Image (cartoon, rainbow, N blue to C red):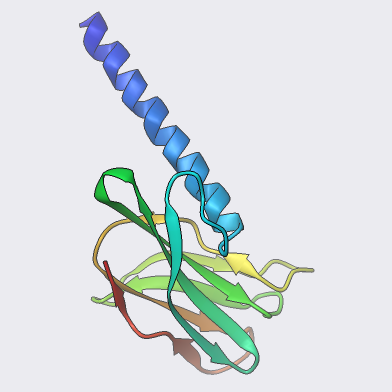
Length: 131
């Protein structure tokens, strides 16, 4: 029993380290993280705002995604949705900032990134990307 608990704690430590590395990658989307290679999977632009969908392949065939909104305004939103239309991660541009990243979403599948300017009637989305 003690060995099983120790093994579970070791696995939890590895998962925490991977998540920490991917969070760092999300904060700096143009750079590859130590945990895996990151690439731009899809993007779109509307009214000067740019949304990006980043995909990260980390060891052992695990995929992770995060969305980014650039050149936005406080209150603008960005989200990742799957091919069924479910939102899996989202974020809002905070006051005093012009960009924001969503949290990392771990999954393979088909996703796109969408955005909406605060006070604007329409949303805009990228094409779908699959991994």
